[in-house]
Image (cartoon, rainbow, N blue to C red; front, side, top):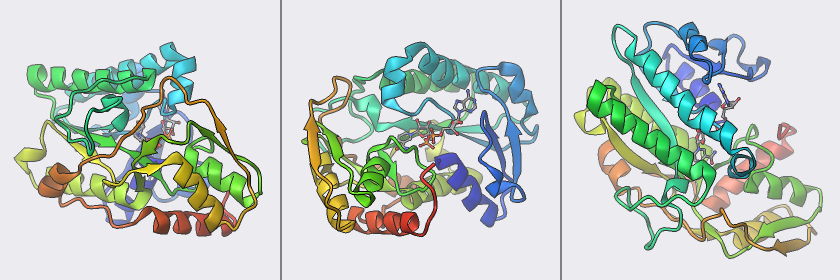
Length: 300
Ligand SMILES: NC(=O)c1ccc[n+]([C@@H]2O[C@H](COP(=O)([O-])OP(=O)(O)OC[C@H]3O[C@@H](n4cnc5c(N)ncnc54)[C@H](O)[C@@H]3O)[C@@H](O)[C@H]2O)c1
């Protein structure tokens, strides 16, 4: 989802863009930019990437924590070995591209204090979070030892795209609320930081701009891309139900072992270095998202 939205945005800014994915993003992009079908776990597939690439924004991943718990080997293969293949490809290029790595707030696990700065100790609880922490370590290894330039973006929970995975909390609540079906919470007290898709894309574009201008401070740096506001999952359910004027029942199940209890990010560093700042409140973002859904676009 994030990669496709970013590609659309960059194409409107007249960047030359190629999307590399194991699955095509339907026909909606056909004329806008080059699409390459390939698997990052197969090193040779990466040779299909354009040779003169300046920046790789690495978004490909097993991105669902629940799927990663069920299939840890697949998660490790895509999220860590896949990244290793990308860096090896990058180091083979005449001019080594800058790699932007889409990491996650899941690397923090259950942080001791909120809001969480990038300097906070990483204690991932989930398989997915550990795979992202390994990816970050891998980039530090190649960055120091092989001069591979990189930047890590730790996203909080990104929402607001009609192309989001339907299992994620906001799409699942929205879909069910619009159909008056129950909204299921896994321990509704969990507090998360939700950042609207347009704000997340702005953060990446601002970083690309900084890299293109040769800003040294963004090189080999890590940034939180988040909203800075915590909302409980129970509150997300109530807000979604109210915004949809829905009769949905809100059901609570036991919390899941791998879920963090609370995350709220601190984005001061991204604001200082990139000029990043979220501009869309959760309530506004939710209403924009629901309008898109009501406009008839599918959740798939
Ligand atoms: N969406 C969020 O809330 C969020 C939060 C934190 C971090 N992230 C990270 O940001 C990145 C993008 O997230 P997203 O929400 O767009 O995820 P997504 O699951 O929608 O997109 C991931 C893409 O990777 C592709 N992919 C999977 N395996 C591949 C392989 N072996 N080779 C090539 N492509 C492959 C998929 O086809 C998919 O298009 C991911 O790395 C994710 O872990 C996302």
